[in-house]
Length: 379
Image (cartoon, rainbow, N blue to C red; front, side, top):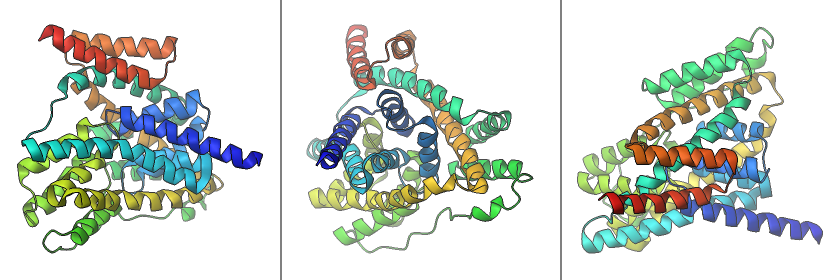
């Protein structure tokens, strides 16, 4: 009986946490991961820094939205398969709901609602949260000079435009090579993985073809929202002419400005093409592979630490994953800190995090309110 009550409590706490995060996690995958680290590791103690890093590295090696997969992974560690499904669904649903509302307004009125004032204040606060997460995780990922050097190499490669998957696999391979003399049999435990495979031609747009397209996309897509844009443009605009270029850019913009996973772009596109049912099948199609992939890595990751070879490879991947997160943060900082007001918001958010350790949700809400007030006073 006590075990059943404990399971129910864990599931309720997971649902409440990821629903709240789904409503407030602006800023893209790096920001989502930072907020999860702040809550799940620092405040609640659900995971150690080491376990969190292992999950982050593994999620970056599989197709799909890495931050959504982190929500699923944390849920799996906390409450098994029920936690995996609950964590993923609760993180995705708020963004899907907001995206549907925007899609309805877009179809009805022909343009996107404006939210620049809100994001003006949210972005610099998100930057402070990401920096704190990088600092805490970096102390775990870069404990030795080779790991630190590897992180610097991975960061340089990312800034130079090397594909994220190549950065991760290269970092893992370099760390494995560094430790090879100590464990000459280690490399046999590490196998390769395909980067991508082609999407077959599809018929005219229908619910089944829409579902199949987004299912395949969720199964093969590595990288950021910009990689998602490239896939969508190549097929939906150039090959099948399901969307115009302007509609695609609007769809990606909605995925960027709403909280939660960027992959809810699929929800917007599905609604444009086939209404409510199209939004449903597109959303299920693009996220379904992640639930399956995360279920597999949930079984595999704990075993990776038992082999010297896979442990070395995973250490390298973790260093590469943090380097990618730092690279995205650099790009975010250039877009977030645009004037003295945003610089003050970012600095104030960092000071509050260090001194008072508040719940990040309140910082995000406060940043949005401050941005709205500043924009109203200045303009």
